[in-house]
Image (cartoon, rainbow, N blue to C red):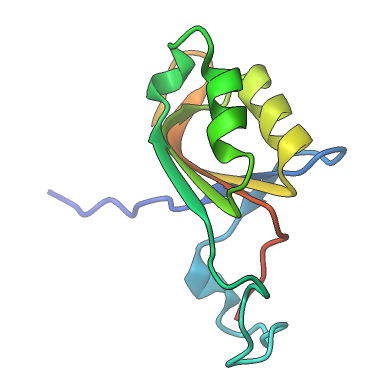
Length: 124
């Protein structure tokens, strides 16, 4: 059986901009770092991270729960996030960047891991 090449990518959602397909990390090998090595990523003492299996937003009050628990988080990792218009709108209204790696393509919206960040992404 022939090996199938896996199509690895992520989608980036930023408020006021069209969705953007992001290449895998190896694609940036020739790009010079834009962040100096050894520089802390945050000036805060701690980086606050929230991890939640959002279960494809099936809980009725998912937006208020996410807003409450994620209000002080620098980084939010959502498992089973489905890119519905509501989630994309929430992400781009409350965070500077939202990246998703689609794992399953469901009939209407891809589902997978989504990262919401209070800072713009950098490559180092």
